[in-house]
Amino acid sequence: RGTLQDGGVPLWGLSPIPLKPNATDVEVLARGHKMKSRFVLVGHATVPAPGMTETLTVRLFGTRTGELVWKESFETSKHAADEVAGLVATAVRKYLDDGAV
Image (cartoon, rainbow, N blue to C red; front, side, top):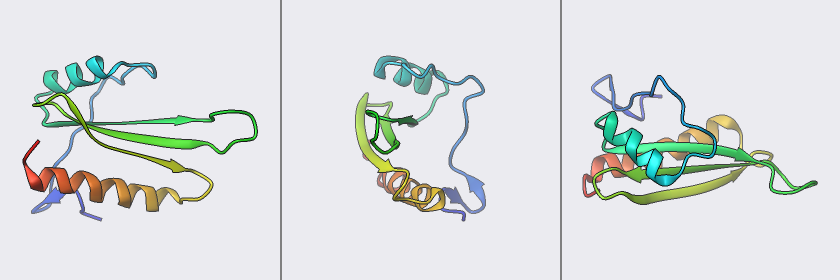
């Protein structure tokens, strides 16, 4: 869709080494610093309890400040994957364009 691009150039990169599923915020931010990134986006899918819906929680950290700047949870049964991708891309783009964090 081009949402996270500038003139056709991607505004993102992927770490070749995945974070552990139980990575702490400190470890997430350390990865961002190592990659010289302004932000780190992480996602985690969980099933909270038997009979409950699987949820995808996405968090965006600002590496300059070390703060959690955005977090959203999506029930996977209520949102299509492309809808979630669009919502996440829009939220991330807001922070890329803002430049405050």
